[in-house]
Image (cartoon, rainbow, N blue to C red; front, side, top):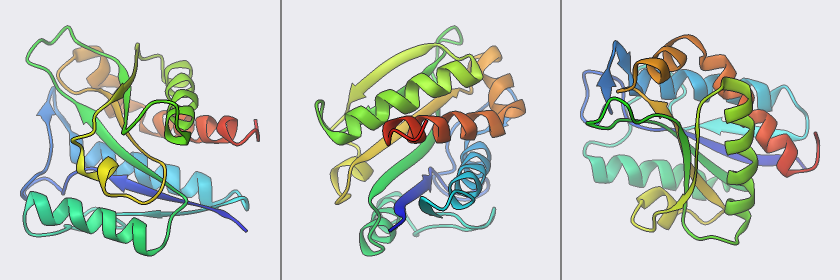
Length: 189
């Protein structure tokens, strides 16, 4: 049995509601989309995994409001049903010096926590971002409402010049880092 991983590319395409952060020429939703597709391709070329994405095309729009968009992402994962849920995002901050990668989970000392640790370490090693650690955020809808271990990755900050360059130029590396973290979590690497 293949391990089923649902990849949620956070936000909707630019020009739609809830399209995410924009700074330094980087559109969050486009980065999330491409990193998700790259990760799906890596996982689906490995017979141990089966991966699906929330946005299979660059123009896929989920829901008609922020609430229904989040609910649709969770519904797709729960009804499949996925074994793991990974939501991909980019961060922003009013302070352009703030940079790095962090992963949000619902609760410490869980499978999501162990998976988040492996993914965070592998992304930081692969891409060269700063390790901002694992954080609990129980208010995030996709972490609260999914029926499987779930995490939300903030790849890097679009508002930081160095991070934004990585988000623009190294999307395949971010996907590779996440994939390596998944392999380590399962003891495959």
